[in-house]
Amino acid sequence: AAVGASAAPTAGAAGATEPVRPAAVSVHRAYKRFGERQVLAGIDLEVPAGQVLAVLGPSGSGKSTLLRVINHLEQLDAGHVEVGGEPVGVRRHRGRFKELGPRQIRAQRSRIGFVFQDFNLFPHLTALDNVAAAPVATRRAGRAQARERARELLGRVGLADRAEAYPRQLSGGQQQRVAIARALALDPGVILFDEPTSALDPELVGEVLAVIRDLATSGTTLIVVTHEIGFARDVADAVVFLDGGRIVEQGPPDQVLTAPRHPRTREFLSRVL
Ligand code: ADP
Ligand code: MG
Image (tube, rainbow, N blue to C red):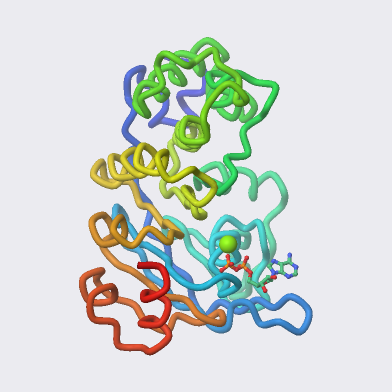
């Protein structure tokens, strides 16, 4: 048996590139303020396991903050988040919530993939080592096993031939695909994407969306903040439109994107389309 197989039953089998158990995500009455500014003003959200949610909304509407609270990079002032049925960042103790310790938070975070707008790759590591780093650091896998798996994941995002390249030697689209492979390396139950194509030259957007589309069809739970309306329409099971920290509209993409009910949604769509 592979090193770390007991800690991560899904990662043990060589060749298993499918994330095994997609996790449902729910956000209950989430409130978050920064100073005077109410950035999340009572968000309720359910993403069933294996579904794809597209999050739309103008700049400053709270989209990134919403992703960050799901990953516990920010703490809520009120409300709570569950991923895979487990409260994030807290545990229930005698009917109340208590903060988890740093170790438990790290363990939870490792089950939630995060892909950033600006890739955030380690500049001093090759593509392969960027992907292998977390499984090694978290002792999910030995170094050799992690590198073998990283090679597979780079193949999955179409970069088998760039394993030894450093981030600066890769295009933005390639770097973002490495970042997606890196997110997959810990077999997350859900992957959060924060405007994954916003930093890319237009001709590189398609290759990244194609990889996300592939993940969507493979049954991973995805929450994607995006301005790519065509992508949302094709790939998302549901769309939410955020404005001023509230969900002002949600529903299936053909409803929200084709026949929006709310004037704010209509105005936003007329600007991005
Ligand atoms: P979006 O991703 O939709 O553009 P954000 O969630 O990044 O919106 O931010 C929503 C609002 O919260 C913005 O006004 C932003 O300036 C503010 N904000 C976000 N993070 C912080 C922070 N750490 N400290 C203070 N204000 C913040
Ligand atoms: Mg943002």
